[in-house]
Length: 180
Image 1 (cartoon, rainbow, N blue to C red):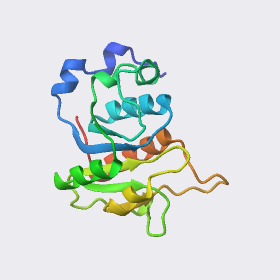
Image 2: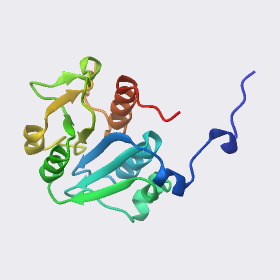
Image 3: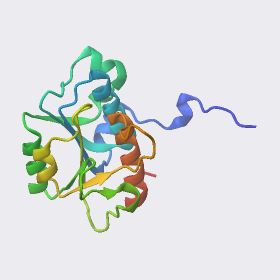
């Protein structure tokens, strides 16, 4: 019979241990995210996957912020972040540092996530866009490519946090990222 694990059994890192621990070679770029709850939830997702950092761009709010904290649950203290006024500047900086940058967007040349193979990529960054307009056109053009999450309903859009979780889970499996 199954039983839930206690918090002590989960092997969670302390804030200090998290900051010192190795990170996945992954960066999240948030392009003009309006919802403070979405920003906080992305921080929490980034903490769970132990990504290197988050680039907060444009109108995306930055910590400390009580409404971000509500959903981040302290992960703004563990996950590194940088602010960029323009998303294209974040993309350019990451590319100069050797990251391959992919916009998560529906475009005419996008590759379905299930067909995307990050062979020999090394360090990778994903740009997630505004809740209404998606990833900005300049960032799409500047990115090394675009990845689309296949969808089969009527809406053809996921909440940004859902998209981040799907993409990170998929990429971690494909890149065989593990901390065990």
